[in-house]
Amino acid sequence: MKFSPALFGLALLAQPMAALADNHDEAAVHLGVRPLYLVDQMDDSALKDKLASCANGPFQKTDFSIGHRGAALQFPEHTKESYIAAARQGAGIIECDVAFTADQELVCRHSQSDLHTTTDILLRPELAAKCSVPFSPADPATGKKAEAKCSTSDITLAEYMTLNGKMDGANPNATTVEDYVKGTAGFRTDLYATTGTLVTHKQSIELIKSLGGKFTPELKTPTVDMPYQGDFSQAAYAQKMIDEYKDAGIDPKSVWAQSFLLDDVLYWIENEPEFGAQAVYLDGRYGEEGFDPMDPSTYGKSMQDLADAGVNYIAPPLWVLVTTEDGKIVPSVYAKEAKAAGLNIITWTLERSGPLNNGGGWYFQSITDVTNNDGVAFELLDVLAKEVGVVGVFSDWPATTTYYANCMGL
Image 1 (cartoon, rainbow, N blue to C red):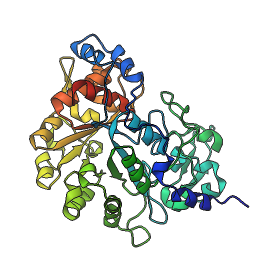
Image 2: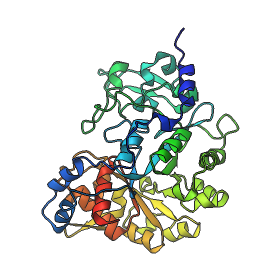
Image 3: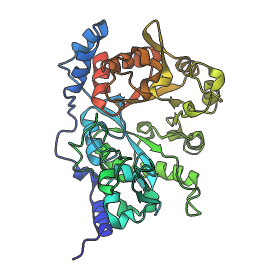
Image 4: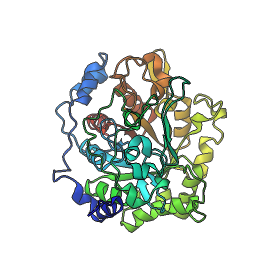
């Protein structure tokens, strides 16, 4: 019998996702050596002493620790394996970024158009042929970079489920597809990437529930014109995501629905108030020209405007919430404004920057002058928790945030 990717995908869909998890005690929390490595790297301080004193635990799951795409530092993001790893590291809340397929089914993927960097689709000729932008090689003579664009909306759900997840990345200088897909960042690893089981949004709900976790789905901004296929509107997309939690019998208090589009958040507040009460506005205003977290006049809508519209949770990137004074990390004006308006603050993303000895890169850009070793991750966490008052932190390696939260009794 000839192998059929579509039939294989349908067979995978028929399996209960919880049954695909290993038969381990998922209530146990395993933090490994990394948190203690970070403690060892810290400069001598009372905080270092306190964190070192917690080395023997005990450790338990905590909602302060949010698995960003699972445990994406070392596992292929948005896969069964990544979600299980996040739960084992004590993430009380686990994220599924929600995109849609050609047949309007919801799946977990960071972007609607990232299959070429997060899966093996380009190595599958029958599916690669369906990509929005086929692979084209780099041309060293002209300086042209390799490119491709493969979207969830290019293929059906059954076809999607035949793909294998890989570590996110691509080689822009590649002249072959085989070299193009080899783009894992040096500070990550392919050690756990031989298997990356993709999941639908419904399967993620089932799996995360079986792991004792809570949910933070992000409605991804579409990369196709909406309404898609003439009938799938943005509102229908936002509603479908919530409906899958309702159909699964999930308590709205266990769900933090997210979007970078404020209109999505306002839609949930108006149409699904139980879910809207915990809807998270992912604040992307940092990308707007002139935005300055230290100057409220550059925010557009004020924090109080957002609160008055019914927004209860706001989530900017790490660097927006902090600055430095006299060589110390302190809350930014943005953080103070959000807190004054009564907004709950969540932030992203720890453990996504690689080694911090050279300033930490994008996520640490407002505290570059004090970021000189990996232990600064804990110093930043301490300010975010105690002075900014964040209620949760996304991390690519939840063990780090779990360790801190347990040690501090959060």
